[in-house]
Amino acid sequence: MAARILANLLVVGSGVLARAFVQAYRQALTNASKTGVAHEAAQSIRRASKTMAEGEARQVLGVTEHASWEEIVQRYDTMFERNAKNGSFYLQSKVHRAKECLEDVYGKKAEGITDA
Image (cartoon, rainbow, N blue to C red; front, side, top):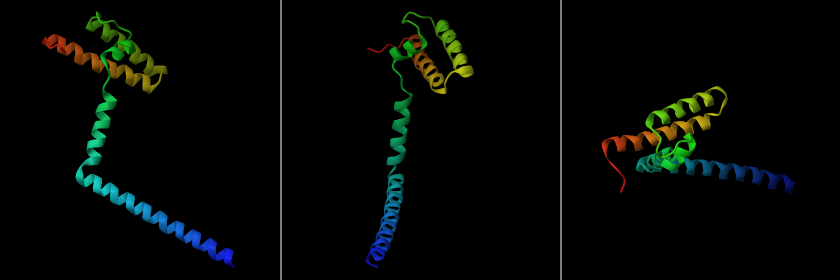
């Protein structure tokens, strides 16, 4: 009899705790969305995940610092198509991010802007 009461108490108590936890989590999400914290955190994660260093971009595409833009585009097309047919989406996205990074670099060089 005592074991049955103890078991019922445990089940009911854990249910109450679970509901309280879910309610607290929902309230935290509501508060975060009101203050814009969640949106700001998501934006910073997106920005950080999309950035790639120039050196890494050149390694991904297998080009040197003296490569022409045409050579970069040719390497990009080749690698992108290979990964589209029988490669992985992850590698394909890395190739795409590398091209985006080098587009910025070559665009700045064309405009005459250099990082000093």
